[in-house]
Amino acid sequence: MQHDIFLVSKKDKSIKIIVDTKYKLRGNFKGDKKKGITQSDLYQMTSYAFRRDCSSVLLLYPNQSDILSEPDIFHISNAHQSQVIKVTAAEIPFWSRLGYKNIDHTLYASLVALLANLSTSQTPSTYFQLQ
Image 1 (spheres, rainbow, N blue to C red):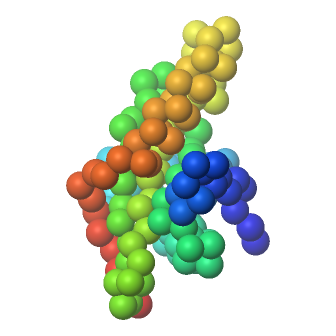
Image 2: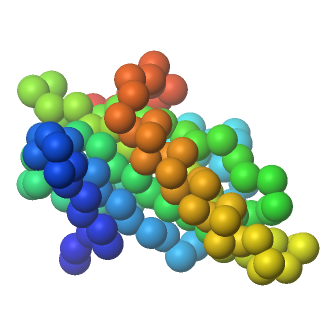
């Protein structure tokens, strides 16, 4: 298995982002501790990140409605806490009840905002530790 996209900054080679697209809905994730992300997806993404010495992972899910949910952010560390992985799970627009007329613009704007947020420091909403 392999991640879908691996981005490396041209200016600073230490800035790396793994992007993985999921072709499944997260379901009713608002009350879920893991926000609809399966344990296997979390382990898969963190193993990719640890292998690539990457500290940011972006999981992209298809939107469930015309109103996109706010991204969910997790911080995962290895057992020795020598590396912390920031996992962002987000919905992006693949469809709209209003049609596909502006979907490309909305998709582009969503991706730009998500990638910009990966480079800023945010307070973790959830913190996990891999054993």
